[in-house]
Length: 540
Ligand code: FRU
Image 1 (spheres, protein in one colour):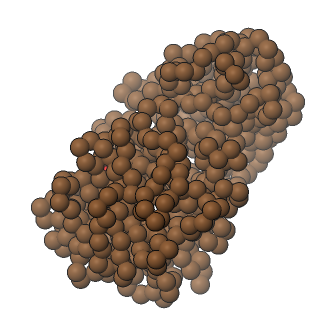
Image 2 (cartoon, helix red, strand yellow; image 1 turned 120 degrees about the horizontal axis):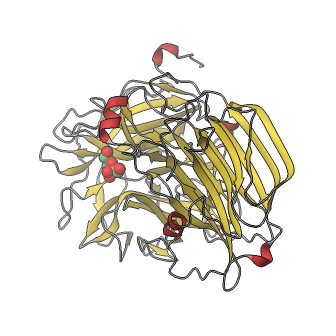
Image 3 (tube, protein in one colour; image 1 turned 180 degrees about the vertical axis):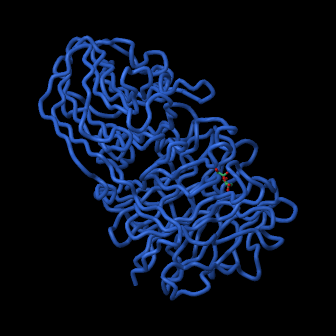
């Protein structure tokens, strides 16, 4: 990270410059992971000729940037190539389905296939001559028909795909069917329509195993899976669990999207337009999400770039069956360098304890807190409580009984700047309640950045298990996983005083009760190789 680019990251995916948004068409194919993404080649802001940029990797961590895969060229995509997905057809043939903005700025769906299947990097893509293959159906607005998912095969052997849309302010997933992937027939009814939300962007629909952490292929339908429906709206990625009734061709959800703090989200910080894929080599489902900036457009233009991809996360269904769990892919651990560990250390009320010996600007920290003094905690009735607002009101310096305790990341020596990731524990009407917060209010002396505090509940019982936190810290991003992946909060911050060398990491406890660090492991993180073609080391 150079002197004048303190906010570029060391192990998060980003192109050398310019604007990035949604991950597109992630896949594993012939030994290679592919990531396409929304990219503006002309600047650090969203553009009016968006393209699909393309990078490949052998390990999801080190990346080689390739030439752009899909750019506006034809009447069916001349105004932009927007988000979409890959499906791998029988015979191991990947195909891209993406949204084009046509000459009239209508959203249409287009196909593209690899020019040469024996090129292991699939560098060149050919657009289908009969594009578009889907145009906005009757009753659907031309600018509300986008972001096709990975297709799945129905029990009848025919393909299904959904497209994000909206009808009378009800977000929905329009369903299509096809035999040959080229001619598509729309169902009368959507696969799912929500009561409470507006336009859906980037839907994702996939099965999760009910009794295993393994992922399953997108077409799997049997009694050992549930289905996940994810939709992007209100700047967040929400999901519901349910059953796919393939006879009725409907998704029967266990709850509806409300667009409020009651909904399940992949991440309660910055994380949008995400997409999963099935990695058949490691039998896991992997989630990518776009993490945008919190600084201003002027800042982005000055620094010449905007947007990151999250660390790819493995996702699976929690044993409770009530929510998903997420964890950084294991490959990230190959970047771990020198390690520090702590066992059984008491954090007294008011303690601020520096974790030295690792690079505080580039670190992976995992800590388990034990809370022995549970009896005395405050009562809280969580009904109607918005955890994010609660975290904003009771910030990192506001004392409670149990909490706030946690990490002060990307901090200056004197703590003027700090991003606090912490917990509070309350006694609820029927059980204890654990609140997780990410407090950005003191993250930077700079005034023009958005410092909104994030927060969510973590569904764990502190009588039965330790309260765990893993944070991946990378210069201007902190990705935090609470309760072993039950609650994730990602944040973007822009410390000014805390330069790379002057960066510090602390554990703190501002509650009146002590807590115990029962176990902590932290590592410096090496820089991932995320490079242009020149450095390409070909491994056939
Ligand atoms: C989501 C989104 C998609 C669209 C793409 C355009 O962030 O608005 O709906 O396809 O970005 O870049």
